[in-house]
Image (tube, rainbow, N blue to C red; front, side, top):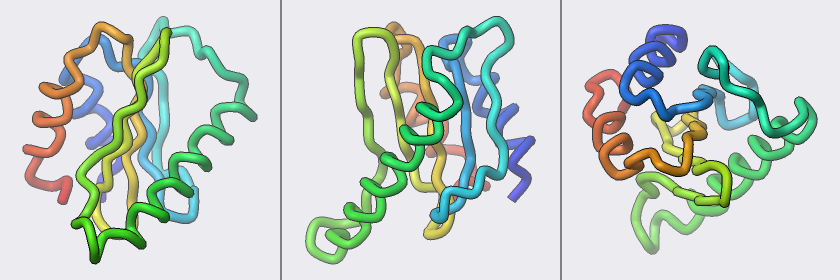
Length: 118
């Protein structure tokens, strides 16, 4: 998996994307960066905690998969941002934050259409 290429491909999909993080299921970050000029709303510690919570939640969803089906994505919308979590495969997760105005449905469709993602 070429994490830098994936980051660039996704970041270029929509100017409203703030952050793209690619990590494994253990929380090891393969690649992560903010869009140039974007101010991070969380401290480094808070960002790490948010990623850990997303990973933990995804692990719970995976356990339920045999009964409800494999998870496709999770969207959390806050007053200031949207957070999208998408499994890349059984071992990696894509964690994205966007501006609230981002058309998340269109973005998710575009990401999931990338041939090398799944």
